[in-house]
Length: 218
Image (cartoon, rainbow, N blue to C red; front, side):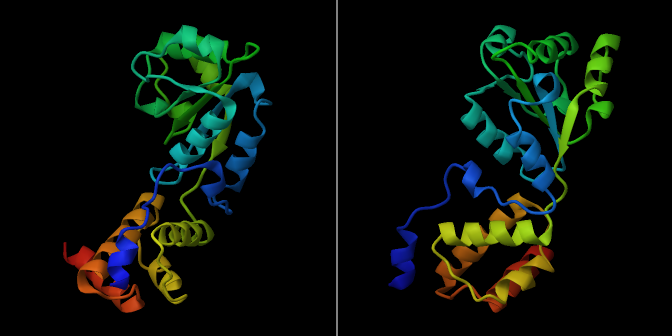
């Protein structure tokens, strides 16, 4: 019955700035975003590997700054001229001329531009020489792969959101064995939650071992 009652409670929803776990791997990047609107030229490139929390942090900045999200394939320059703008996954391709104009627009009063990417601007495709010079001058904030402090923090948050209180020993056990990304942490907690419900078991190291072994077999 206790498991059934817990099933009726809420599940994770929208991520906010106060939910973002700060640690050595992302502290400098967080400070750079918090320095808005003091970015050099009004633009900032937020870079880091997949699953490090870029979209979470960028989305929280956009909400706080009243920024608009732009379509990477066809950015709306007029929209970007009226409010700060967020452009994600820039290294996956943005029309060169549009990106050049967006960076220029970012320096205007009331504008601004946050770009996310896995790679640094120096590695972005730049068909226009003037765009290359703009990219080389961009201010950069880098998030590294999540460290243990960040991963433990997000695991605790994901468990808390599901109203689960595992024994303390579960955390170091998972940290030594799980994949090093925030989406993987969320998936691990989801699988533990569902396995516990299905088997009427509490979330323990034994259940964590079962889930990890099942993942290896899969």
